[in-house]
Length: 116
Image (cartoon, rainbow, N blue to C red; front, side, top):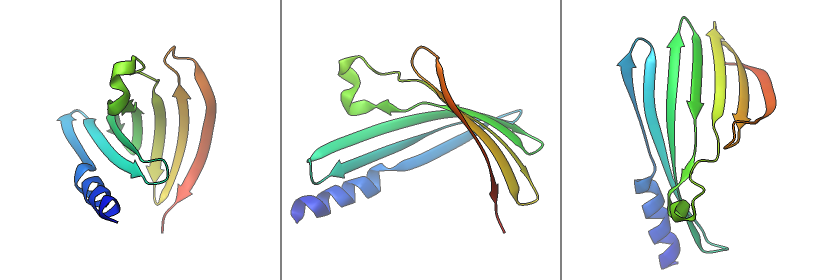
């Protein structure tokens, strides 16, 4: 029980999000995510840097996830996640695609979100 409470406290304090507008519609930020899995007793610490550009309701973004605890094994860069969105009057259309470390692209996901 002590491990569970300690890991829950660490996860809550270690997870953060930050973003900074650098002008001309460009935004740079990062998300950190620390987690502990009780069944396998493993820790994970991921950092996800993100760059996005937005203007007139359209947003283009790219991000990648880095596993900090596994950084010494050499597989630091695993590819990029690309996303394009357009928001208008509560409707957001989006397209997502991921690439691997060699920039070979996978499946393209397209959709729409409604908010009211």
